[in-house]
Structures are given as structure tokens and as C-alpha cells.
Image (cartoon, rainbow, N blue to C red):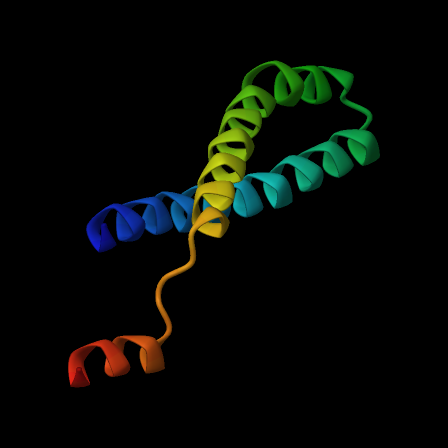
Length: 84
């Protein structure tokens, strides 16, 4: 069970990192496109960059839900179980 939790935790961390980095690049690209006056840059970002960010956000949300669904046992509970 711990291996599954670690795998879900890894997926959560990876997708969260991708989502945060993608969000910064997306907003910076939009701001730059507005300053330069290139509407085509905004269209490009919305058509090709945004879908990947939405997928990463969805996977991150599902992984976060799974991580919060069942928390690992506390250390003191494990210690009591081993002393019996």
C-alpha cells in the first residue's frame, strides 16, 4: 500500500511542478504578447499550451484527492502495534 501511495505522491508532485511552471510561462507569454501587440501569440498559447496545463491540473487534482482520502498511519500508532 505504501508503494502505491508513493507512486501517487510522485505523480502529484510532478504534475504540480509542471502545472506551476506552465502557469508562469503561460501568463508571462500572454503578458509579453499583450505588450508587444501580437494577438497571434495569445491564440498560440491558448490552442497549444493551455490543453496540456488543463490535463496536468486534472491529474494533479485526482492525485491530491487520492492522497487526502487515506492518510498514512501515525508513527505512534505503528509503535504501539509493534510493541504488542
